[in-house]
Amino acid sequence: MTDSTTGTSSSTAPDPASPSTSSPVLDLGPQTEVLAQLVGGVGDEQLERPTPCPEYEVRHLLGHLAGLAAAFRDAARKDLGVTTDTSPGSSLPELGPDWREELPKVLADLAEAWRDPAAWTGMTRAGGVDLPGEVAGVVATDELVIHGWDLARATGRPYTPDPAALQVCHDFLEASADSPDRGEIFAPVVPVGPDAPLLARAVGLSGRDPGWTRT
Image (cartoon, rainbow, N blue to C red; front, side, top):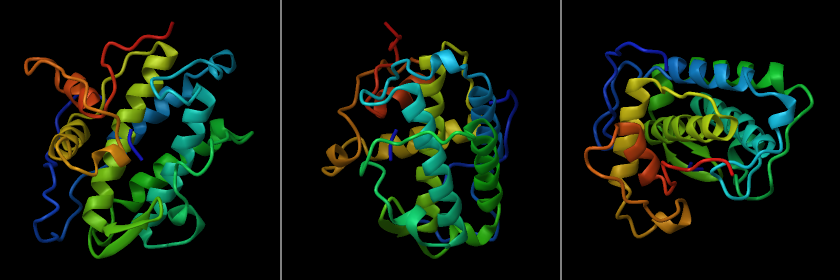
């Protein structure tokens, strides 16, 4: 695991240490819609392009997105099994033949699953790791925002993530920047100026160079 449309959102960044509330912490729908639009614009000729993820071509990134969307959908539902128990680094993700239809659908299903307040409570699992539901929702948000940037950069598309999702992603990555376990998940932080846009700072915190371009 890593790693919008314009407008505002009333959602606030979650505090994993705070008690669970009676409503979802964040609506992931706006961010999954941004990602689905990016997916819809990927041409067959772009599938073998490199991405900011060193081991991934675009087709692998899309396969990873499909897998993580299914995993976090099922994590929200507490439907634990193969999708939630498999480590994302266990193999290079492959892209199914019907990905143009299936990936937008599983992204929409992911967003719908996290609209259930129960998704943000109790314990669940993703990537073979047990974690609180609220933390899993934040990790899912990080994945959607950062991999959206990966896909946009690899395919030469503009990218404006959902503002609320971006804030949650940034705060999560900032909080983990000095964690001794960071190296197990993220590459080293790429320094970015404090006056840089929030997206660039989040990308740097994820271990990516915000200036990455396809060569």
